[in-house]
Image 1: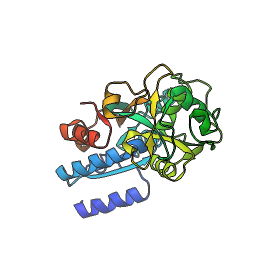
Image 2 (image 1 turned 120 degrees about the vertical axis):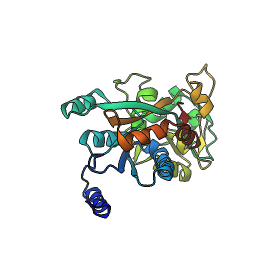
Image 3 (image 1 turned 60 degrees about the vertical axis):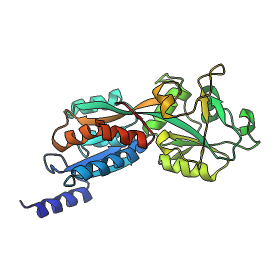
Image 4 (image 1 turned 135 degrees about the horizontal axis):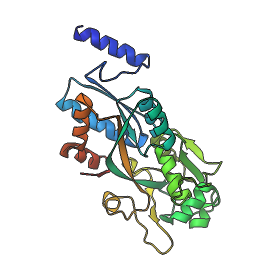
Length: 285
């Protein structure tokens, strides 16, 4: 089969939503998953293509849960995820004969952000917990103006949503009963949270530190009332002093081979880890 015809088949398969595996398209890599990591994945893909221009790398977000589901259904080669796989997902993988291989590729701090005009500049974990659960409803109760708080959260398929719920609302207890306020606005992406905070003086939201922008004010966070307030910076996440920090993962089906292995090696290379730093995450190597 000649190369042009192969390319036509590949495009047709992608348009129809069919699984494109390395065996079917050796010069194609499908990466899906975390919105937190999508810019990082795209930056890796662009740099990798300068070295390997013959490889077609497609990167899409949708959330960590979406990426894991794609890996389990065989519709992606690499899953980017801001959380580890859950036991129920591992059971599905086992039933389907899939052996997820986990790699920590970067570290991240979840930034809590407000409108630049908001006078509040720092909060404790308990204050954040009170706001996002809906117990604290007015900014004046945490040192701000007498205006109602608008809560922004990622959607439930987001690894960032799950991590924030477990580590802020539930204080590290994964199966605790605490939930986000029923009045929280569930946003489809980290960029959607950034855009809403930029335009809404009442809003508070959270996203991975790779989305930090001067258009939003980053809140310094303290573990408790007796601890120092710390901002989500590369130095603070690396030193483990920022209280809302986490690893970022890549999953493949078993040991990666061929161009998948080449891409993974690039992500962990000096250049790949420098891209991690340039996209405001923390390198692991």
